[in-house]
Image (cartoon, rainbow, N blue to C red; front, top):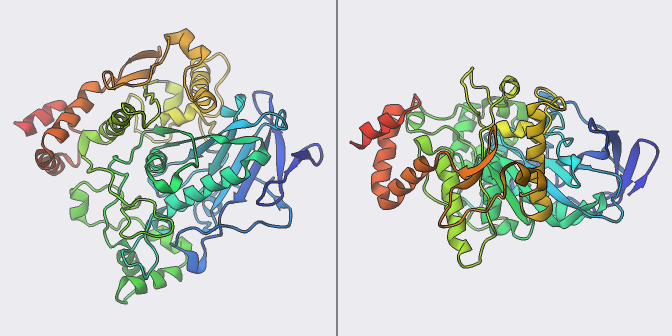
Length: 484
């Protein structure tokens, strides 16, 4: 890496020369920003809906020093989206490769917020890590599929985009001061589902070394999507009157991306919604083996209702613990984010209409400064101290493969990984933080017993819950009534 002048910096990775821009963070350290680096061919024209294809190296200098505006047109409606951002501290790069953290954004597989305004680097780069964020195809563009090999759209293009980004990191991150032999992937919600799929899929083998699943799982109800003939549904909604999937895909390749994005949702029938379907785009079981087959097997049947977050995470944890007994898997730590703060309530990513308690994805506010909301907490405030704890946990795990650190152990002692005898031991990140059993322990064990003892009864139970409580949040008294 070399400095071009006082503000720019140029790197020479195998993909081609890239210009970035230097910046001083709010914490006083200097770091380099590289925005919108392409990691695969633009999925345009005949490549729309298809698996991603490798990008040839470029010969001219790529200017990655300009941060495009965070607008609907640039971030959602731009189909040429297979691009990534690299944030790295310029000093000390020549002799000290740094662990790499790759964040996979969530958004119900409908949007991919990877802009610096939403997932900025300044919290995490207080430590010696390189941060990579990236965009991938979402919605119809990333997750339409066909069982017909002749059509060549087996599905999961959005997940395969992620694989291409991981490959790009392996091939190029050394030029940014990153260590390709120490890569941690982490993601929240749909991003958490994605992380789990990368842990399971042979396509992602050897592309990363540790992983953090945040509020998501391959066993999560949004993790695997039923096949609903969405291609023909969407095409008919947009005016297609032909016959067959091949004709529908051909029609959709000629439709403006703005039109597709405007109509890709609301394709479920009322009956499907009553049956509990909440999302139509996401990972699918691929019907045939292709060059980039991502999901050749079904991960697990999924439950509904109160299992939305806790049971799938517990299920994933238990599957890892079973294999750990024969030395097949790495240690696994569990944390529960329960930190409540009026300041976080004001800027949370998932609005909850004034309901108390912690919301889905609140922990992201303490990992990434959000320029449209929470931002950087004032030094000395409870939020500032909690942000520092979260940063220590995540970066310690990325650097050492262990989330324990001096700050954490000083506050609450050693955080031990889960075991078969104590699978729900966790770091409860609250006020105050403490090591304890998962607060929802009894609930997840209830679902585990119900599901494992009788899958047929669990299916009946799921249907009865869906019929009676699909439009409200039910209580444990409601569950007891259904069981009886």
